[in-house]
Image (cartoon, rainbow, N blue to C red; front, top):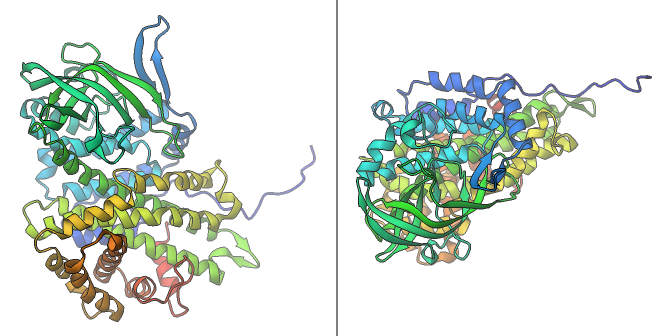
Length: 549
């Protein structure tokens, strides 16, 4: 066979790299928010999620997608989802890292930094594979909600905080580890859960409390192989939160039937389903008729994960783009040394670091439930971070893909990860409330006492460091106080995000990063598309900080 060409000028893939050691933005944000945090677990996790072995598992879990088996060969209903072994390998590592309910264990809570450690780990794992983190995120969110049913919590908490992954479908007491999901939305209502029609009829009480028989459906029911779910259903006293296990205490299967799996744009390794309940057994969690406050509390935690996840995806996309352009030559020099490419990459680096700073700042508020300022900022920053970071994600992914040209558009090889990232990016913006829902939620938060004062206090450390930021910081409290209509809520969410990001960068990033961010995003020296930074920017300093090696 005649050799027709020699392959050269193709970059080596980004593999076997410690994703934490190379992430200076994350290290700086953690040093600022949790200076006493022991980062050794993150060093260990960074090596695992950056390894070639785990990257292979991530690829295989997305290629060999979940398969629904409604019946066995004898014609009996089984309603089980089969996953490729690589899916289970990924889940095992995520659980071992404590990214699910472990943050609520007494051991982790005693550190005072449980949520920030977990947040950083969640971001690192997202760089490897985001879609398997859906059941991980839901388990994290529902674990504290279970405390409203003490009997269930006492029996399930050890399994939900365990670092052992057990995918077998059997009664909880026989398992070494447990995961949980949520079932809230229905086809007629979507985000408007008050329109839910699923009914729950009381059937008595037992050691888990008030028991109900549930009949209805759920339109998005992700990770249906979890051990139990918190669902919303209408009782005689209104919309209520119920605990619904897959396997009942007597070992029999609950009446939960999987109708089909969703065929999604991305998030391929995760099984999202439509389900029906036909007299399924469930137990009340919290006060009957108070399901909305329950779901809002859980939604706050999953919205944190949306911001963390998109920030992690941004970092991975940026790392791949930097790795590629540093090795690929075009027009006589490396791509990364071409002026326009350097501008694009530096601009992307600013966006990535700002997203990391804001997401980890939000995580800090979860570690300080007794701090009044932190709780106001939690209420403000949760919708803001979820709105802005996730909204920027899709544009960011498209631009990083373009840095690779055609190589970024293919699904195979190391750089094929970029196509997977691009398909994944819209999800976090939609899941747990799309942009309009977040903007309205911000307005609700602003009606609470001291919101404007808390925001002014948050921005105060950066006062006098950049004139454009000073102007915006002076305007925001006034706008917050005067905001009376939804029409301007999205713009306000954007400006609050930019102001807080800038104030954080002033305290965690080099002056080159802070100055360029303020000049472009706030000062108007930007064309509103990546790669339009001003000529006076210190591009090399920004890129050196962002390099993934």
